[in-house]
Image (cartoon, rainbow, N blue to C red; front, side, top):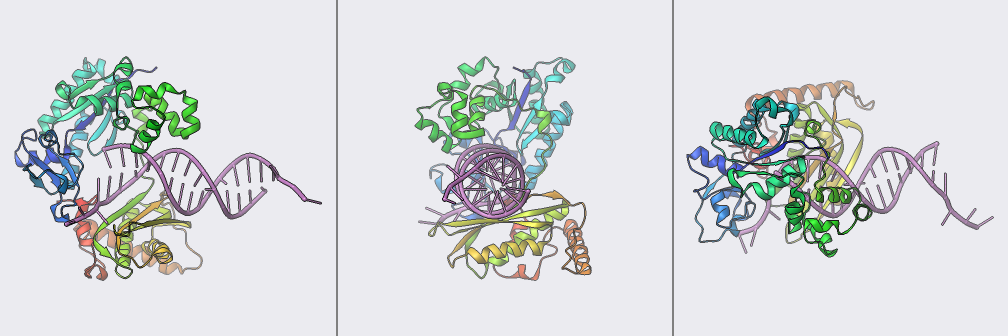
Length: 416
DNA sequence: TCTGGGGTCCTAGGACCC
DNA sequence: TCTGGGGTCCTAGGACCC
């Protein structure tokens, strides 16, 4: 089996640690959590400091779930600050490896294939990991943790399972650790790739730790769970053929937006929200010079109703036109919506493609098409320069609009 | 006193075509 | 009277991740 030196580095309690660093506090002795208190007690905690974790506060829970006797600082999320830190850290990685050997997995987790650098640096994978982590600490004040493995999977699992409690926050697993460490993982959902549902199915088969997956041969899983079943068996045996260098190219396959509304909406004020979301998505398409030809629209009612619907529509021609996207959404909305309290809206654009040429619809006047796209370009240019709130449609000034608030968010959380 | 948000990949069934 | 089958696209839904 191929043996490489893969580092999987993540930033410990990333958002919470950034907030501590910015305040000159130590996350290991400060009870701080990141959450938006303006969303009420049901707000999600996005991150908590190691100290709070120690006291039993889960890293992703709700504010009202935190035991009353625990005192803490609450920091509203500042997403663009975290992005700034993240970029800084990615640049540190790039001081050590070339971009082909780096795979940024999420805002706070990256894989580095350092195999070909060890001779050059005259270092072991562990000492190089330590050097990179020290550099991060020195330049940003943040503590990181690292899993090291002969492939990406084992590096990731070493990170998840062992690095947080090991010395220097570094855990290295080799193929020899499969039996002693990988196979001992229990409950099953602690393993990357196994969630609650899969765990239950495996439990029903009498499988309670990773090693017990070998109770049945690979073909059993293939028949029962398809491709994912096969992958499950390979992962349970520490086998992973994926390469850091081949993961680099990640182009978005879909653009989506969803929001849980701050209060219940109805048949009449929901279209405004849909309009705003379509507008934001169309803008994203135009900024990236992309088109979509598959539009999904989903809606969920308030908890007391607890039902939802999702439908999608494939277009005959790719588009990035806000009104076309809106019309498709409204079509689905009007066809399926019931007069019940509405609480969540989801819109996703699939089949994203590069926009190479303008496909003119014969039934539309060419002039109108051109005028529209010119107008859109201008709107894009202005909002790029002055921020998204510089130009808003008149409807956005209406009482039920959420766009102003959302323009100050990134991934649904406050930017500033 | 209660609702996070943005993604990816896979499967199954139906429609349609040849 | 009488089971076709393979390929591909579309839609819906499920599961997982950070």
